[in-house]
Image (cartoon, rainbow, N blue to C red; front, side, top):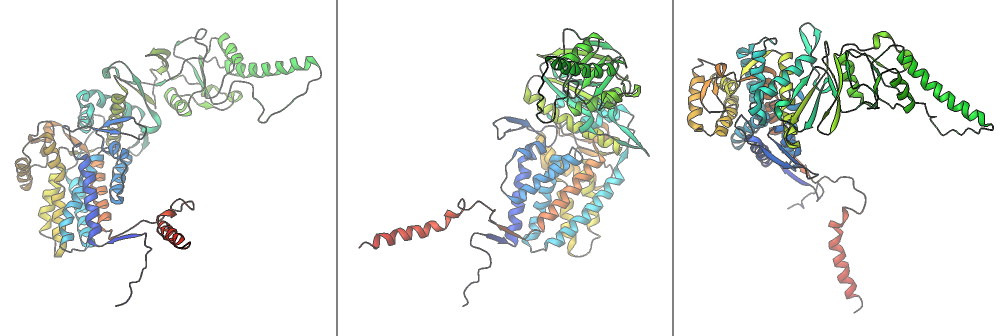
Length: 556
């Protein structure tokens, strides 16, 4: 018998073969189970404690998984899924995980029977292509201009969220905001940049019903000299600067030794002159409001007051960009380069209001704003955070539809149609790939099944009815109404999903499950490069005890 050869270090653990695949599947299923109950309108909320001891109460799949600290590598990659989904289309974060978990679950049986993972993956990819083809068939184009349809769509997206009790409100906000800032790129394409041009201001207090979309921008700032400057200006002329209106201090420390006292006065005079010049250049354009990103000295403030100009200082760059978009001004770097075209005249009203205990400046009633602010009011901070997350999802859905105006049925109807079609197609597939293909078809049913579970109806009966209806292929729009658990036609109930959310969900889920199935070896325990002495003591400890014994023996 030969001595065993050690290839890997002792400290490395290596698992290979079927064991790994089982472990990965288990881990992925565990992740899917965590957020399975948050799918659908009757969903539960999860409460998470984050690292700093704050609480997050949410049922947004991505928000939950983001807070979890997970050890298993396969589970980590599942979490990445929902993040991709969130960044790509903004909705369907929960469905992606549930679907991927189910895909892996049905693959387990084949791995037990010693199917090769690549065979399963090939079948899955084939199923994916066919699924997308089915989506294309049953998709229904809509008119983005038709507000009713848009409302129904956004509502069905956030019907699964906590704010569904204020359904119309959030949907309205989202549609208003996204239609405001949509920019036509030509060729019928619209670009909607939510991150840049929609600001969500959360102000605790008041009721949710007070939330609005402002036709303009709101900033958490007051004018520089509240007593002297006007706080309400109708049709203001706005100048935006990103330079300081104060005397430039030297970059490095400069010492000037003055021999005569008069020179000192000359120096001060020069500073004053400099600021006066700056202000005169601005005053020439007769603005009513000057906003700068940098500082504004008392003297400049005095000159501006004298000419009846209100000023706001130290504004965030992003806010400044939004104001520029909203009122049509151009941000100017140096006051001496101002032109008439840089003055923004698009705003209808500038006013400073006190909300709660803070002052907010509103620049509203803009003519053709390309930026807007959503003002959210609500009772508590947690509530506002959750509403904001829901609003983000709603806006993403509105954006998706504006970009790709096609609809699919919600309520699990799409998945069932795909599933039924794939089942029929599976009989025409030759060879061993037929079974995994069929299994993938069954996996799609996870979503309607979960919906049924969450509204507490008889799952098996409901699923049988649904499968029966879809197998005959009479109506692709039959699904579960997530509120009541009744099997109905989704068209009548206005339960819809956006096409590219669904397509993205399917693609992400299947590709990810293929990736996890293909892993057949996990080598763990690879040492991080650590400072010497911090991670060493595990082994040498044994030897030192031995040494201690030896020392005792020596004196004898």
